[in-house]
Length: 293
Image (tube, rainbow, N blue to C red):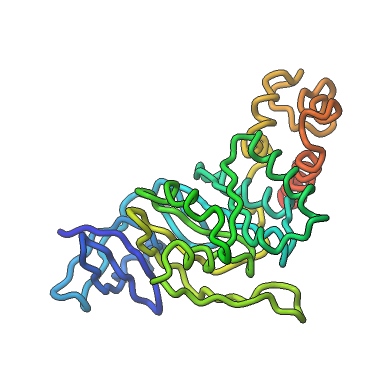
């Protein structure tokens, strides 16, 4: 049986890439029975008599999957956050990073719209960029207007399956258009009334960029820690995980425990206060969702 990769799912059809050909397929009823929903990025077994009349028969084991956006087998997540309009939000970025780290996907941070940053906001933005780079995250400063930083992003995309994700209106589609103008993806400005971006991407689709595949995904503005246990959260903050070896108690949650190496590092200025505040906020959300008995 032939195999391929789902590159688009739309209106009950799955578009399977096999070599240079794309086969339009439907899902067999067995998926509904087994509660398996094929996702963009899935490696599948299919059968087809022609390019428009195929069926997905089997979904191969996934190495990872995301719920929002719905996509599987991602190598890396390119998290796009605008410098302004909407303003750069480290709190929202940390939410994205926790989700990505929990799924063992490599995150890359892209700051967009740098050409719009007023001088009085640049110092604060540079400080945030420096903090995340010190944590080991690749951070690129870009502008789809001046094309600053676009070439720097290209090597990260080659040979990988990447998901572009971020809040609505941050310029994900604009950056993809700057990388490859032939894409001509829809873009839209920030709504002046609502103060947030309008959704311009309506479905998940893998697009060829260089030698890689990139998913331009519907924008979303919030993330919930639906499945995460409190003990897992430390692993999603790389600097906390390294420091936790020096905590007095094994399994320290860096909250009310004495002789906590993470809290000591925050007090000493070795860890940004905002990162710790975000950690505590996320920890509280997880505790409220899953009461301790």
